[in-house]
Image 1 (cartoon, rainbow, N blue to C red):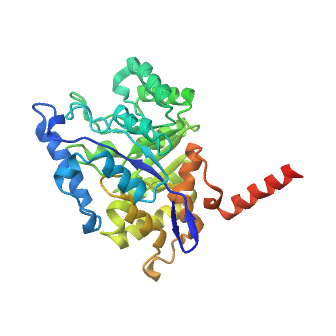
Image 2 (cartoon, rainbow, N blue to C red):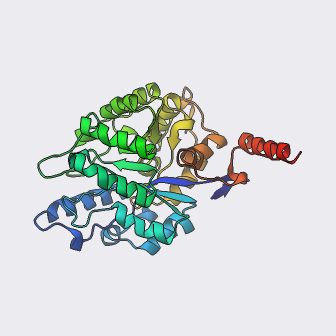
Image 3 (cartoon, rainbow, N blue to C red):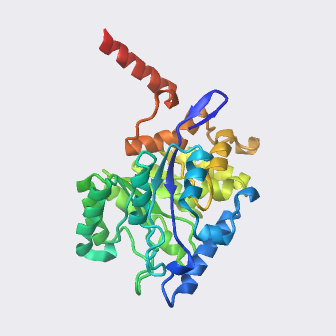
Length: 346
């Protein structure tokens, strides 16, 4: 929880990771791909404040103690949602798998929500293992990585009928939140495999699911905004937007936030730090303090305190049915709850 000027912000970091990209975890013969991947990731961290930059050695293999301190002790986060990314084509045991994340979830059950993933290239044979992971870990969401390499394939699409089989399974199992990485790429993946067009197709077909477009499709922000405004079940995941743009390109950050507030609205935007690329503390404090820099942005909607509370945690809490303390709720919701208690007592 973060508190400033008498206002309390319940914080859900809806997009974070605990990865292993060290040399011992690299597939023999593909070390250059694994090394290039993590070095590209590391370069993104340089877009945050200098005092938050890590050495490449720490960035490859940070510790559990680093994560718990940066996210929960110093980082103001109340609940964090793990988003897995397997990348087993060049990381032997995977980069950031459901099973690896589950070890921390088991140690700190109240701190983490554990999402899993699927890949339609597993075919019908993959449906049963997917269902087993969902039931074992209680997952209410999935993270999809449509540009992931596998053998000769360099990606897949949500328009694929086999992807529909998995989304139908999500509906059947109550996995209602589909987080899709769409936007910035990391070497050596293909940028076009992260295009948002297939989300448009899937969101219309599966209206019982919520599609949280992580990184809002950057650099295709206009494509995302026009698509998201027509699809009521598409959300804007702000990871990368805050981490890569708020400090290094504040005017572009304001433009992106303005477009999102105008087209998508504060009720469908969720905060994610993308830890460990960036630490949550400076992003959360910066978002609470944020406003447009000058009047050239006057045709965009303003973001007030209640909107910031929604984006930092209340919207994700609603998607994942997370209980929010009374003193962190919106004033209207808190008053409504008080009235309900009074009615019960009379």
